[in-house]
Image (cartoon, rainbow, N blue to C red; front, side, top):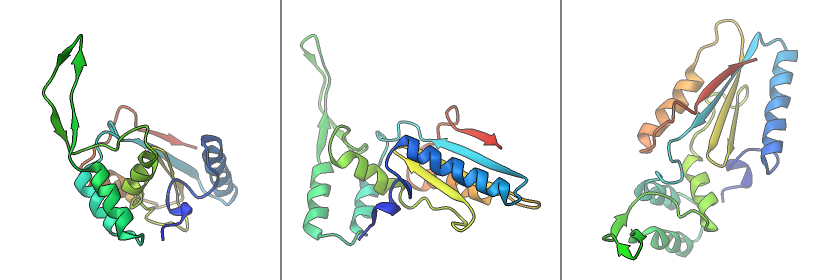
Length: 174
């Protein structure tokens, strides 16, 4: 069974708790002799709208939950259609094979499941905070450290048919 700590972040349940968790680790690393702390916040373009149904269904099948529940969620995502109506004029219905239906109870769960396999390269020494569709990685910088952590997160979107939004992705060095 997937525990709560595998989704979102490890401590707390809101933005303030996520920020406090980050601040705690940053100050601890600096007190312990890190030269600096590299913080990178990643943003995915239209994150909730671009989740591939095929990929999320494959990830669902790996969970240790009742197969009836998995099939129910897959059925919920399957055969979705969408159309636009403006001033009584209707467009043709089109099939939707991406996106988690926003505003539903399953929305946060499905997106959390989608990004659940983004893991820190060095979980003992680095911090990865996931909150909704925001992902922030923090790495204490010492002499000779490299950027493998960042490269790992940058490679994830391609494998999962998502795109980094570079205009909203930022780096901060403390």
